[in-house]
Length: 238
Ligand code: UDP
Image: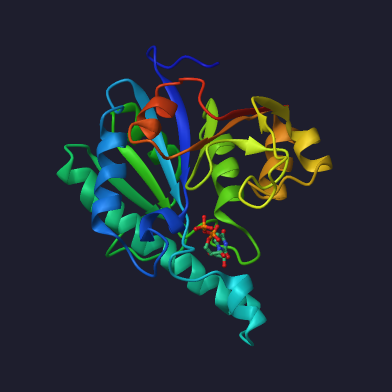
């Protein structure tokens, strides 16, 4: 693990579904709880957040219903920016110092994605929120979390899940024989077709030696625990 001023650096991936509490739009109570958990760790960890957008639009779903895939993906990316702004607001209310960077230029609401500036923000204890994914259709925010982690020299990607607390051998909601996995390699996760994180994100981490932890957002406090490096959920390694 790289040490920076004695602090580790992580990228936290939050799904849009979590922001909406399973509904369309943003649930302020949930986002405020997430923000408080992030703010509780900012004095000890350098944190960047990649936010999803599934509570608004998923390009693949819209394209199945007749829309052009790339245009639908851009709608998905714009949804992630709304989540980024909501998280920025609640992080400020929680006493943190957030900065939003967008991969699609929209200078009134966010800085452009500038990795070196993101690193400076983090060194100063600010939380950087990456919105608009990679700015590229056909990508997911899981993959963006892995890519951003590599580019800003993070030590680990932390993938927060709602409704599941770790990686299992099968979907525990539908398969009673599903077993919880403590540690797995990216290769194994790919071969077994475990869908909890996108295969492209697994591949990118595998090829570049980036560690990942997949954990559940519940109970309250788990996001802080994961940020601080507690071994919750499943560790995924190269
Ligand atoms: N998206 C994209 N390129 C990116 C990131 C996201 O096209 O680099 C689009 C894609 O349509 C995706 C949507 O934005 O479905 C929302 O992101 P994602 O599905 O990863 O959000 P989550 O499932 O984490 O809420």
